Length: 245
Image 1 (cartoon, rainbow, N blue to C red):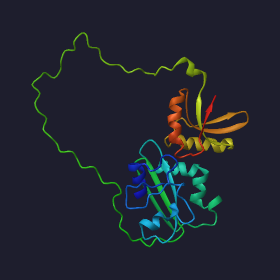
Image 2 (spheres, rainbow, N blue to C red; image 1 turned 90 degrees about the vertical axis):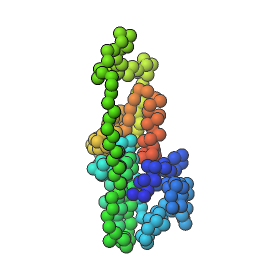
Image 3 (spheres, rainbow, N blue to C red; image 1 turned 45 degrees about the vertical axis):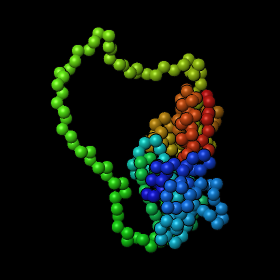
Image 4 (tube, rainbow, N blue to C red; image 1 turned 90 degrees about the horizontal axis):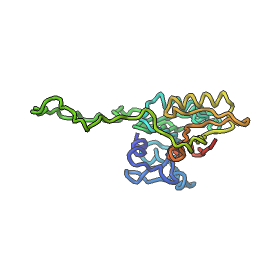
């Protein structure tokens, strides 16, 4: 929970620092990952720095624009090859056994830590992760001497909201896509796209063109909108890139 709160409140994941970074706003050593990573200084040492955990631990992080729920996070982690290998000890993580696990969801961030050594603090009591907001004091409304309704002057018209936002004609010439994965099998890409659509990327789709299968997380004819979204997507998918068609 400590790292999830630090990410949400202080955003150390800026510039060249990614989600595994820590701010200088707490009782820990600030860390910009991967810039500060060395043979003697690793983000994997953070649990050992902050708790009685005796060894290194490995972290996976998820973020999206909206407050998270656990089912959303696990859906993405199951459908992403890297995360799935991590959870099931496959691929790069083959041969490792997780004997300690910590998971926290706070607002837009989810962090999970995995260690091979048992956690000595298994008997700690469970506390509420996020305190409830105090209820606002109720106040008695003051009587309104004016009538409940007022006649609208003839010169005042009610505001209207357009059903659609007009798009400039020249922007209709192209569509911009944020590609997060390539060289996938189409059935695998479709499964991942379905998971993304349920977890904060409603426009996720598979692009099948010129014999190449690409997975797009977002699309728009407005390049400025796509570039703004690309910065956010890169926090999760570092190799995301822009495709114009």
